[in-house]
Image (cartoon, rainbow, N blue to C red; front, top):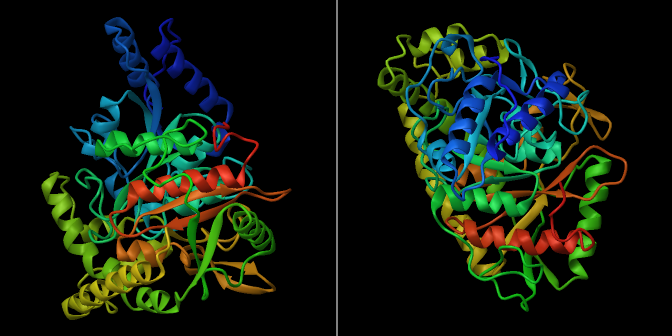
Amino acid sequence: MVGQGAAGHGPAQEAVAAALERAAAVADLNAFITLDAQGAGAEAARHDRRGGGTRRWCLAVKDNVHVAGLPNTAGTPGLAGFVPAADAPVVAALRAAGAIVLGKTNMHELALGVTSCNPTFGAVGNGADPALFAGGSSGGTAAAVASGIVDAGLGTDTGGSVGIPAALNGIYGLRPSAGRYPSAGVTPLSVTRDTPGPMARTLERLTALDSFVTGRSLIGSSPTGRTGAALPPDRALRLGLPRHVFTEDLETPVRVAWEAAVERLGTARARWVPVDTGHLVEFDARVGMHLVLGEFAAAFDRYLAGHRIGRSTAEVVGAAADPAVAELLAAAALPTGPAYPGPAALRGAVVERRAMQAAYAELFAASGVDAILCPTVPVCARPLHRHEESLRLNGRDVPTFPTLIRNTSPSATAGLPSVTVPLPVDGSAPVGLQLVGPRGGDRGLLAVAARIDVLLRPGEAGGTRR
């Protein structure tokens, strides 16, 4: 923890004091690597002295997104001493909209994993049940948001690192279209696939966060009075129902929640359109990891040199505490590694990615769907420390990492936007619904998500719950 904050009397100070009190109450979640009580309290006091009409709110930032004056470890020992001098542009945009950064959140080491069980900083507990893992790699941000510590959070997403923990913690998450959010000041993994992404407990706030970062807002309003849609409210939604992979082999609670959502939406002015998606999964299998492994070393070299961190990529990888992360990067992401794919494989992956993007564009154009829907993750969160390598799914052991990214990775590889919406569940851990939209169609996708959120929860005023 960096310093101690004192409760103030102004609204911003009161917001920070309440957030710190909540953080202390759920400290066992291990959501933060750095909790900046002193800095957040001082910033709140400055805002209260100045006054003004902007409401101040508390933000959690994943520890691979730069915040001026706070360590940026990316969850790995090799970067523990790095303290950026400036905010990442995405953080600066949110500060300008009233955010007070409460601290930097725990994560899967170097953002290369899906559980956020970090050997150096501890495992992140789930905001819905601390005995379960939070998902990853943005698990600390999701836990901080879901448990009510902060109003909103910022994560990063390469192959599902926003959507997966959002789904497993029962909150909303947005992976924007590739290049839509500024990527400067973010510790890289894959320059093609990486993006910052926001999380919140309501879709209304998630949509506002996107407006703060991009300066764009939805046009019109929905029947519920929320920020709404350029989508005509009297037009039935056209929803893509995948024929392959995405809706298959689901854990029972996920299957039950998904089937209930399909039935409810199908009787509530939404038309289901079957879509072929098997080829998209095949594209991802050929392209996804080649991009990550082929791009990592050069991007990380530039990052370390540009910020004068004083360590080489090989040194940072060599100091990694998670054996799975260290072994994968050393063997397949460093040019000296025996499994390094090489420049030719990377060039081939880039070409294949363009074909994959064209296939997605053709699917949307031919089907006319507003979004493609499926469960965000085919399983629920599992107990901490037990399922780093494998978990049980429908009576057999399956590898954890590819299972959790199965539904999120294809659209992420193609650079498409996706929104995760919590599904109503009965007696199980949280389950998420993923909506994928056409590239660049982020605001339309958020409008579709708003309609769906209302249809799934007709008694909850469309996602206005805590």
